[in-house]
Image (tube, rainbow, N blue to C red; front, side):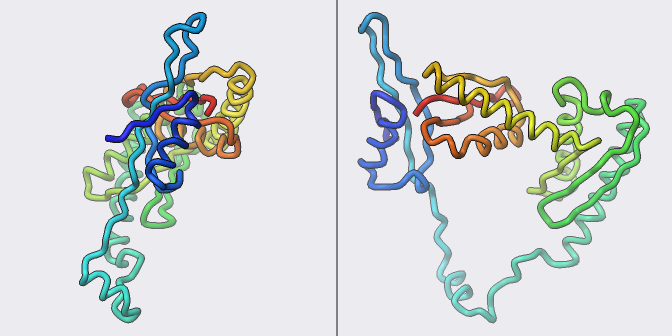
Length: 235
């Protein structure tokens, strides 16, 4: 696979894009090595990145013919029967989660919603919010993942579950945004990359989104689940 080097991450990426004649939106970029200034001018190491072109699935001839005829285009939404079946499983999930919380000695009233075929929202009203959330949100995140496992095991795939209580998710998103921006300013002032604590995928996504307007910085994830973490670094 093509690897490209440069004195900085931005230079390495630009070298790769120029060689491939592609834009940043057309490729996947993986950081292989961070640049190092070495020790008293010795052992300097350039940045190294792996750049691959994003794959664009090509429609078959039958699909192309069908898409060219508006009357033969398939419906974009799942059939009502399938949605109803999935929603029935989601309601079963609500009862399953209620039983799990009871085993944890958490009395809660659940509000379960499925606004579309890709998202499920579950709000828990309880007087034991701290126990439900857990330290750094670990308990509520684990329960949220358990809900997704339940749906997958019952044939409801590619559905994101959001489990919330007392507006925790909104408060947590603000905390992550503040953390991302504060860390970004530290990276700017020191010129050194910073590794954040490990967090679940949907929280890492919030970090990436919070720093989209920091054009001089780059964010990427390293490590393996569940210890995958975000790195904020100069370009």
